[in-house]
Image 1 (cartoon, rainbow, N blue to C red):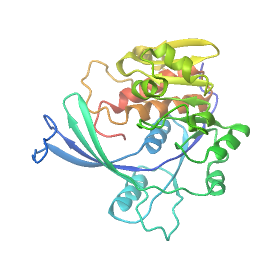
Image 2: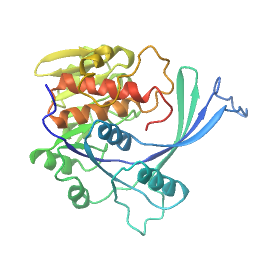
Image 3: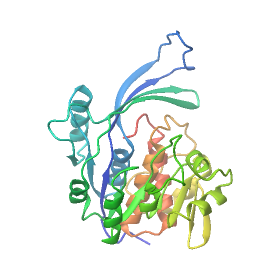
Length: 302
């Protein structure tokens, strides 16, 4: 099955500027100073990273985001423009903050640690709808604009969410963002938190009470999804099945992972592209694996 169209994928979400400290053998103890072997500021953020990966497969993409004032905002604009990412800014000129997240990313052997400073803003539903309408696929922002997503779904858009981990995340909250989605793509830790289960099959079945098709990413074990009463697990080496139809090379799985930052976002970007292009869920998961495997072979999300 080949792609039937070039999809238009729009996403709304905040930009991250990731300040990446690499080469740390461990995290410092309180009061201790350690030296990293390298430092690099990189553009990140869930939805921007997802759109960048979708565009790598050939999707037309538009980012709806928040860019205010300050050094990191200028860095974000310069980087977006340099990478050819089309974006629309929801922040009014009078807004005093940056509108973005700034994260210190500390890479230690086999693990990553984060410290983030967040600047939050909520736009009007009318403005968000105006910028997102017309998309084949919409990548949603958690906790906001639920009525907009529901309206877009009623008009034929596919709405996908991958929201990240939070101690407060719960399926019991009224008007949960998950309720507005066609596909929800948590990782294993997030799915465990939401479902209180350690069994991936039970996780996706539980999540299917809230979203038509949940897809849980399992790291090196691949991904599992539940649709139409059937549970399916897709291993990461399945990317060989699409090596003849994608324009980016299939990575060498024998190589050591450089940086897993953004792997989940990349998966969602590849998945969103495939759904928008007309592929089925199984093939969309494989596109997700291919995108994730590409991003972990280098530093940063782009």
